[in-house]
Image (cartoon, rainbow, N blue to C red; front, side, top):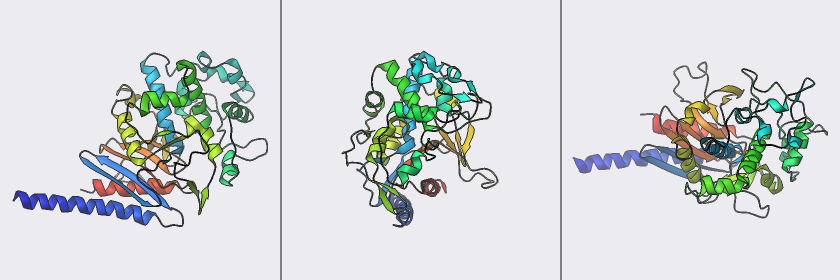
Length: 360
């Protein structure tokens, strides 16, 4: 009986592994997606897979999933009483940074900005990446056209100050996703600690968590990360990728990301009680809401009346990378489809893979 039972369990697990690998293989169509890498954990169940031109040991750009690392650093500093969500930015940043940073309807609200506003995207600051500059063009459009460039923190500030703010900081029910927020958070981290953003990530998160293939991309000659794709071609923008830093400059693997995700949501990196505080949601773009330093993926009842697709909290990136935790099912999932033009495919892949594990 025991041998029969063991054989049945082994067959069941084999079928699950094959079904999940099949999802990745079908996702890679060599038209929109040329490679995929994912890892999933639920209890004792562990799975990881790659398809197409991805390799399990080769890191990839995680884009805005980097923001989870920035959030973790801020929460660590909060636990050490170095800052609070309500602290105004002028406690940590020089006047030249804040001068005319947030102008809304002719009024300067720069000194009303807080750490919490930045984390929750409730600052009302414009997005230096998606917003249009003096030439009427966004950085996103320029980079997606393959016109690479480097930019500094000062460049980001100058670009942001050329754009109008969207609302008064902390306006109830208002949120606007802005990468500028996280560059400011990185500067706060650096000013408090006297160390660079990467040094903080490395000493406070990467090495303590045993992340062997995770780092901040800073050397434009570094060819270790998988090349990004935009539509049907490689997007070669190393100068930009080395400039993003705290809002989107990390590289990692699916196995490292899922380990980090577990550390993040189980209180290994900062007090576990903080997780509940982060879940104050404002809609940013369908079907995501922004919390305090994290995102919520939740399909509305009209599309999923019985909530067969559970809610996930974590973060996603424009590269198609993601790292999410499903509290209802105690499930972790991380990975990428490495496609800048279709990051939504990564979310659909996450749902398909999760359904395999949750169907019973």
